[in-house]
Image (tube, rainbow, N blue to C red; front, side):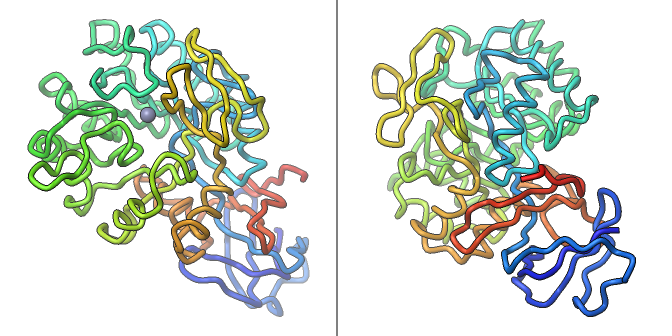
Length: 378
Ligand code: ZN
């Protein structure tokens, strides 16, 4: 038994003082006043820092110099997880973007193997594409955007692998696909979509649960055409992924959107690419050179190519750029993404929850993490 004590504690609701967390193996067994810590428990001193539920990131293409699309392997997933763990992420969906059918099959197989091998932090897979709308492709390779062929359908029939999220353009999805995926336990999100408002609403009715990187690569909200953005904001239950890097979306647009939505539906994602979490500034995306430029990642024509962002910075940005309370920013990085994926044992510090923690100093820098009660040794 371990007792985490001597710091502040964010339990998912409020920041508490004078409380300790008791952990047995991978699980939290109790929250209790520090003076009630059993003598047998090994004490872990938090040194006045803030212990919070570990961050959960639903969109991680890469990090630490590694790109999952380039190397869809168990080792790559492990390396990406290790890089982001330093930035507080203790749960993630490794994200594979639009690519050839064989490579997508390799990504699914690697994720399954990595889950079996117990790669720390890996929750499952996010397939962002290839069933998108080419009109809103962003950096996705137009040559590989398609409606599902027979081989694609066979891959989709193997899902879910762990927690699985599929981002697709609902207006292009073949009849019955959204319903089939949803019934199998896959979470479906709309993204890279040219859907008008009616098509977006029809998607929600079929089972689309959320929206990938709200505002980016979708129809905007205008006076007579609410578009995908308007539909997402107006449809209460739909969750929205937000890239809060100071580049993808203006802070005012984000504040308006957050105000419009019910609590619990706005989620921080990183959309991280190889430069994030300690990687080099340049990388190759399917044969196209991407470079970092003033904090943005761009292709040759200036198109944004994911983000150089980690979860700790996303949380800090949500506080500094959007004016959110720290508690809400932390929930947007842990509890809300867990809920969006139907994961019930993460996102809070409470008895029965997994002992996945991030320890933050007063400038929101990550000093240590634990996954299933095991520290990274930092
Ligand atoms: Zn995208």
